[in-house]
Image (cartoon, rainbow, N blue to C red; front, top):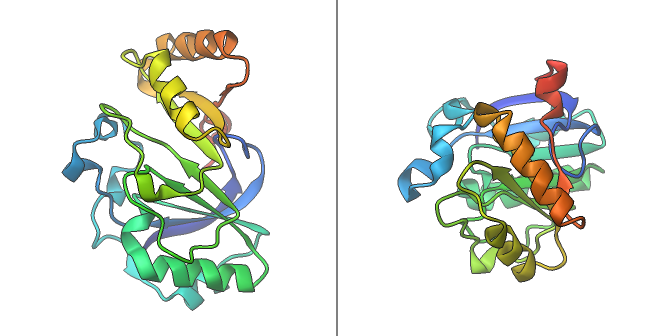
Length: 202
């Protein structure tokens, strides 16, 4: 697998904000190829290159994990397919709870036994693959062209998922106010702030 970094920190976004996790950031992202609008404000553009980082086996990665929960992120981790399934299986066999963060454009591989799936659909279409299967959390970045009906449609398609709205940092304070207004108008949604950035954490 191509791995950019492995580090311990607090989860800074979404439902699990504030919980210690080991982060495994995989290399490679399909956002530029499929025309996702997040390329304008992505805070990890170094993760786009599928040859970035270094090659590591799932067993090597698992040996670097020291916390009870692991967040596998990217880039787009689902690009690593079968190796990702092996990694998740290895981590869970070692007793870790495994979270995955994906942009939702790719289906989950068969047999991928995850403890938490966060899907963060991106503009302009906010598309989620029909093969994504399980969705525990829908995390939407709020920017000036985001309409409430987009989030409502995502929530209706995945009624089991919790909805987190996260202001786009480059548009603050406007996006923050917009996110607050959306959450107040839809009290079953929640506000997600980038806690790690507020605290100066990785």
